[in-house]
Length: 90
Image 1 (cartoon, helix red, strand yellow):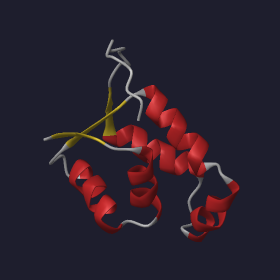
Image 2 (image 1 turned 180 degrees about the horizontal axis):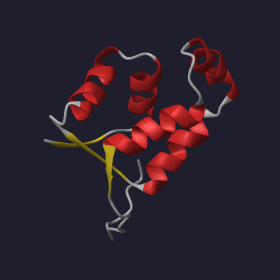
Image 3 (image 1 turned 30 degrees about the vertical axis):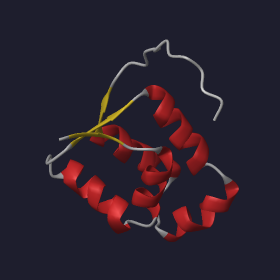
């Protein structure tokens, strides 16, 4: 199975585990493939570096770099492509 995770799911998986953590476990066990673009990984890094997340990261005795390395090991990178669709108001 191939999946794409939102940055919020990554944050929950990496910092709090729970159900999102189970998704990461499936990827670690090669039961699913997580796809991500460099843009998503960049957004993940920006989010992980927010001051409000630092106490949680420190409590896990890991660094932002450790978490990013794990995420990069688990994903298959895919290119960003543009899709020309009509713009919606909402």
